[in-house]
Image (tube, rainbow, N blue to C red; front, side):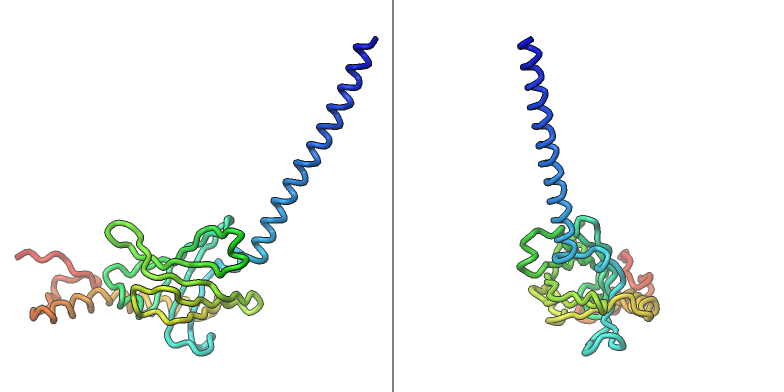
Length: 214
């Protein structure tokens, strides 16, 4: 009889413990959910960052040069995209596929500006050529502003303001793509000129210098 009584008390205790433990788990899940929402609201918003951005002077005040950024942000807050402008293509002419990346943000991004890294393919891997920080997000009007921290290209402006998803993006992208496709050819033409040699026009294809056999 005593064993039955003790068994009953043990079952009651276990039931209470499991209920309490379940409550703790629910609280932890709620805390994690709230933290994710906090990060999305105050640190990053994947949906807002994702899209096509431009410095087109028709839409951005005081825009000195046309620049385009197409970026995809992911659920963890990291983001990756392509950036293009005439000056960037001329400064990095051999491979004008330039990426802008940022890692998944930590809680510290609530207190400091988030960093983005401009990278170019060099020697078989992507290497950082400039660092920017995101200093302002205007989610109401669809605009972001970057400030330059470091720049190995020496062509980026100190501040870059971009507007999102404007009508001229496709035509501007085509215009810049055509310009950037000529950047390698211009580079090699200047290179040969400095060497006192004639640039072999017949040995180029789409602006890329082909191997020349002697």
